[in-house]
Amino acid sequence: MKFDILTLFPEMIESHLNYSILNRAENAGIIDVNTINPRDFTLDKHKKVDNPPFGGGAGMVLMPQPYVDAYESIEKLENSITVMLSPQGEPLNEKLVLDLAKYSQIIMLCGHYEGFDERIREIIKPREISLGDFVLTGGELPALCVIDAVSRKLEGTLGKTESAKDDSFADGLLEYPQYTKPREYRGLKVPEVLLNGNHKEINEFRQSERIKRTKLRRPDLL
Ligand SMILES: C[S@@+](CC[C@H](N)C(=O)[O-])C[C@H]1O[C@@H](n2cnc3c(N)ncnc32)[C@H](O)[C@@H]1O
Image 1 (spheres, rainbow, N blue to C red):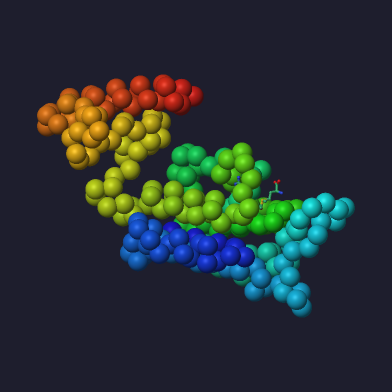
Image 2 (tube, rainbow, N blue to C red):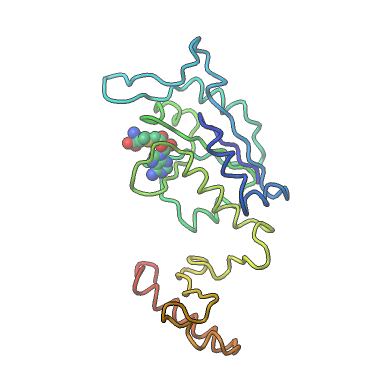
């Protein structure tokens, strides 16, 4: 899976990929993450990529030329999708993550400041994706969330011991509670059923905990 990220702050993306599972996935060639900085494409002699909004108002708006030129410089693979990170987009969820994981290239546009000049949307026609009903300072964290969530769905990203099959949302329910050593901590004991080695009983316990937990915390999922 190729990720091409348009960002004014490439280090924010690159530094995150130096760790843990995503780093391993990149080294194994499962994902390939590139950054493209629109500032490298601006024709402005002061290297500007933003300007105050026409009509007045606070903040700076990202100008179309550097973003459109940077976008058009990217080689598009056959099975490619373009995503704009935006609080006005459709909310990211498990279904959308699975949908994105079917592509071989995801190009993402990260905004900053007051966001994008509307013509960037009109020309590029991206799928707009939001991390939720709140506003962040930039699109880099949401882009990293997309990279992370989609990468977990790709064959080989998770090791054998890190299977996603029981994870929350994988089949619509939240995950069961997890325990590890020690068997007792501050008077709180691990449920006996998890210690008896009876896999049928363990599975039944976990399934009933998943339903109980989902009913309690996220009845909308049922
Ligand atoms: C401060 S925000 C701009 C918000 C814009 N003025 C609005 O009210 O819709 C700057 C950038 O951060 C990113 N961003 C902020 N909140 C986001 C969210 N909830 N989901 C995805 N991206 C977000 C977008 O790329 C956006 O262009």
